[in-house]
Image 1: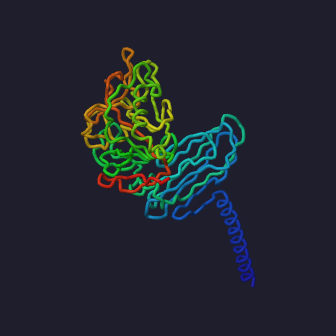
Image 2 (image 1 turned 90 degrees about the horizontal axis):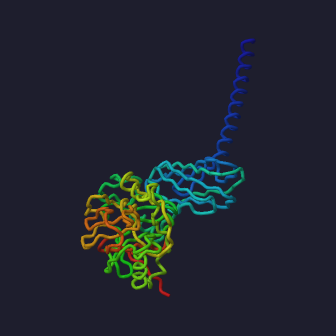
Image 3 (image 1 turned 180 degrees about the vertical axis):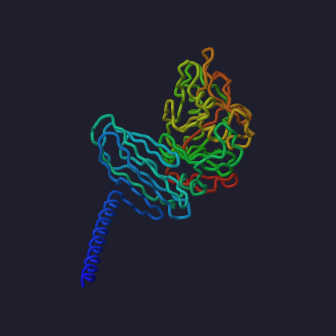
Length: 404
C-alpha cells in the first residue's frame, strides 16, 4: 500500500514537472517569435530579427535575412518608410559583400536585388547618430515581380547574376564573365565584364553597349565606337563641366540624340579630379594603377548631365588593364584613335593627363589633355523604358518608343 502511494506521488510529481517544462518552453517559444518577425512573400522568407519597425537613440545595429526557398533566381527590394530622423546615416552590409550607405530617410534602398535558388543572404543595418536624438522608421523587404519588360528587368531576366568575377581587377578579362552584382552611389548595381555578346543596343540610329544597370534602375550605355569629330579634353580648365570635351559632347547630343531625350536620364557622372597630397597625382591613379581597386562609388565630383564619358573605374571593371585586351566588349577594331575617359591620372609641367583607352583596348595615362583624341559618349536610359530584342548583335535591344 505504501509502495503504491509513493508510486502515485511520483507520477503526480512527474506530471507537475512536465507541465511546468511545457509552460516554460511555451513562454520561451512565444518570446522568440515575438522578437523575430518572419514574413513569407512568395518564394522568399524574410526574417526581421529585430522586427520590421525601429525606434532608437544613438548608434544601433539591427539584422535581417532573406531566404529563397525555390531553385530559381529571384529578385527582391529593400525599402525604408515612415522615417523620422535628423542627421542620421545608415550602412547596409550583406553576407555577400555588398555595402550601401546613405542618409536615413524614406527611400527605396534598392529595388532589384538578385538572390540565387536555395540561398540565404544575411544583412546588418547600422544606424549612425552623432547625438542621442531619437529616430524611427519601418524596414520592408519583399519579392520583386519581373513580369514587365522594362529595360533593367529584361536584362536581369536574360542573364544569370554572379556575385564574384573570374579574374582580378586590372587583369584582362578575356572570357564572358557575365553580369556581376556590385553597388554604386544609388544602390545595388550590375555590370558586364569580359567578352560579352548580349549587351548590344540599337538606339537613336547608333549601336551601343550596355555597361551596367545603375543602382536606381537606369541603364548605362556607351557608344560602340567614337564620334567622327576628334577633340581635345581641355584648353584652360580640365574640370569636366567647363572642359572642351563637354562642349563637344553636348553639341553631338543636340545634333543626334535630342529627339530621343525623353528616354535619356539625367545622371550624376563622376569626374574624379581630387589630388593626392603631392599635388601632382590624382587619387584615381593610385586607386587604379597602384592599388587595383576600381569602384562605382564616386570619389570625385558628381556632375548632373545627360551625356558624359566612361570613368576609368568602369573601364577596369569591364575587363581592361594596362595591357592590350581585344576580347572584352569595350574593344572595337574599328576604333582607330585613342579615346578619353573623364578620370584624372596626373599633372606634369602644368599639363593635365586624363586616363585614356588606346586602340588596343589598354588603359594608358601618357597623353596630355590638350591633344586631339577620340570621344566615346555615354548615356543612361530611364528606368521606366521598355525594350524588345535579345541584346545580341543580330537582335539588339531596342527601346519601345511611345507614340504621342
